[in-house]
Image (spheres, rainbow, N blue to C red):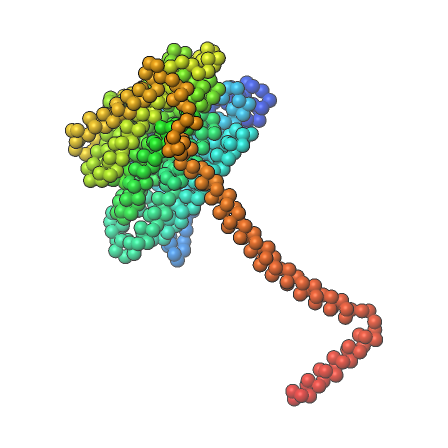
Length: 621
């Protein structure tokens, strides 16, 4: 615990050394590109080791502020004395997140050496990975909302740079801007909520926000309506960062970045930041109630909505992206029904199998040079490690026992049932069946059947740098849920619930096999979208939400509001300026006419002024 600050320092060193020293040298010499990758792996390894040592030493039954540094003190009539600190706060969920982030970051760095070996900007990539890891680690150990907001924005900036890493691609630039703008939109409400609750509670520390005694006093002395409004504003930040409906479109489009970026963003870092924020302030939200009700509804709808879309997609990374959206919905509605432990348990298990699935997708794309399922198939024997690891990952996310996802999903469904929120429970149960269907649809169409790109499959092989992290992640994806379940189980078990959840998973797998993998199946026909009915095309086009957003932005914001403001500026603001300038110009002309240079005119004007002045004095006195 004494050296806990090194967990953050190593990724920052990776960012600084790679970005300032090795990046310029790597552009001139390929050797420095390799050194950059190895250095990034070593920094991630040291950070992971210290995080694991901290977890081994930490008492999960208590909270601890390992160190704190005051960098500013505010003195005002409004807030009084408020100390702003940079701190390292540990409790059960922050230590869990430290382990998950550092482990995932280490494995993604190893994978990236193979994935980015031919990219001329690989050194810049490793530098940005270091910045991203540092930002996320700083976020989860924050003891107050100001520190969290600083690192929250650093996560946003670094993700913007990583999503748009291949800035020569217009689609990558568009996706990075979309992610940045939508999350900044939500973050503006987050900041307003921080300031408002800081004013009401006279503090930005989580310890005071979550203190039941203080909350009880504030609820009595302050209008409950104001606290409800402020809590919803704070939750808006979580809403945008975790891409809940309807602020979801940036997440699938973020697939334009390199696959290691997709893996680290979608597994245990950026997208779960919103879930983490909600969990961190759970006692505060629970005391008010409004936010958790919203979280339950929005989470359940997002889970179902994203799963429906995933069933029709052909881009392997977009399938996984919508899968992430759906799983985030699970985590959020678990919090909404009071299942804090269940939600964090799913964050933990989901991190490993989702990171692995993205890395497998990248390995497949690396072979076939396409994201499209139309170009895949027949890879089972060519990529055996990826095949069996993907099978484990799909079984885990489908909720099939004894794989990890089964245990955490079971806890989530149990929380919904115990809370009496049956609508959310059945939405989660049915979504579980959809999850099994679309994941095994992807699995069968990727690895089974005949090769639809025979040239690529003929030359397919597995890269050792990319295969090692995949195989390592397959282990926790298979067993971590079973090993940890005993420590996190909360509610009294409902005997039939695991059976029902498993049945839905098996049913989804069976339907996927029948449609896409049984003998005689025509994969090309199964993937054809032109012959599908209109409802299928609507789902395939993601309910046209992208088009609606672009239309709203182009027609309402740019042409509508932007056009009105432009006209207002031109016909009103500019008109006022032109009028004032015209009057001054007219007065200037009058003054110039008076400045003729003729002495006689000056003398006459002077004499007239004397006479007029004397007449005024006589009249007055």
